[in-house]
Length: 99
Image 1 (spheres, one colour):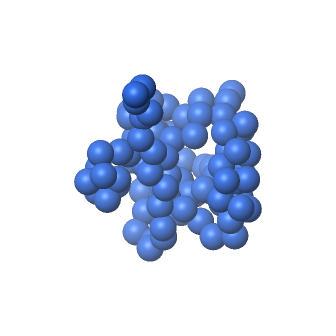
Image 2 (spheres, rainbow, N blue to C red):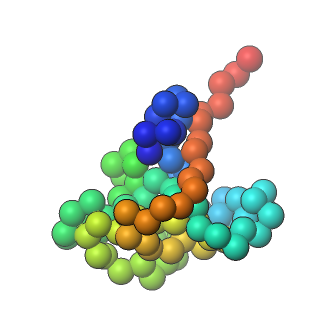
Image 3 (cartoon, rainbow, N blue to C red):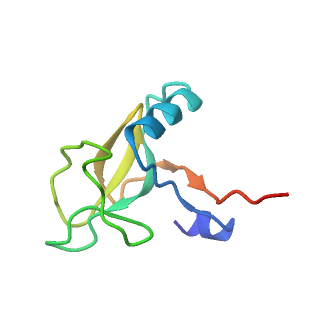
């Protein structure tokens, strides 16, 4: 998260299954996990994106559970939960600007 912010961006927040599939192709079918901007910050809150919005299970169908302190990772065209203290690579996103 800090590295992305230092770059003027934020952790990746894919919005639907189509975007997950595009990412899978772009990353050439990754076999390792990458941190994205999804977590369960505290008990009872459920999965939340970095921008504070809730995960829309209509757009991305996932069975992640709701364990506090879990963070979302991207692997292939799916999202999996991991303990937030796990050492992994990450993917940042930045809003495009018109030139």
